[in-house]
Length: 148
Image 1 (cartoon, helix red, strand yellow):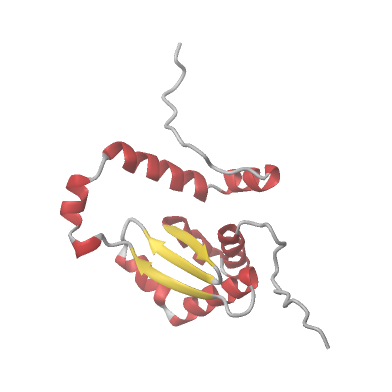
Image 2: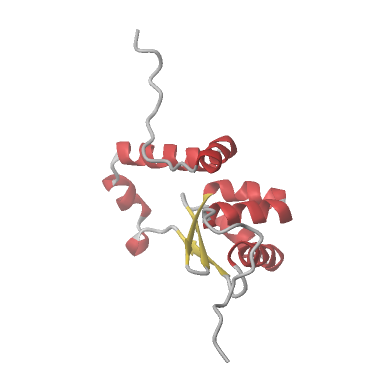
């Protein structure tokens, strides 16, 4: 009697970006919840989906922590990553919890770049183009208009 590798049953093909697969699975189950995820960073490590609300938004964090929505998020994680997948909600508070000190020391150009990257990652047309061509976002820049 030999051992056979365990196959993971998911709704998505292997090689698909796990965070995008999770977002898509949420969209199939609850479109308004999926829209709320536009302001959330989705990180996948193994079978754990970590949701980080950044910038911090207490009402959105409370909404995502509601039992009914939590169940929908868990179901989407299982659909995207397979049985045993879990979802964790993590606050985006700086170390020490002092937002004013963190804001004072933040680099405005880095913050703008981070904001532009999140905006691009959250854009459905950009995601579809990346999926279609197998691309990735490498750099983001603000369009300064026509140089002429």
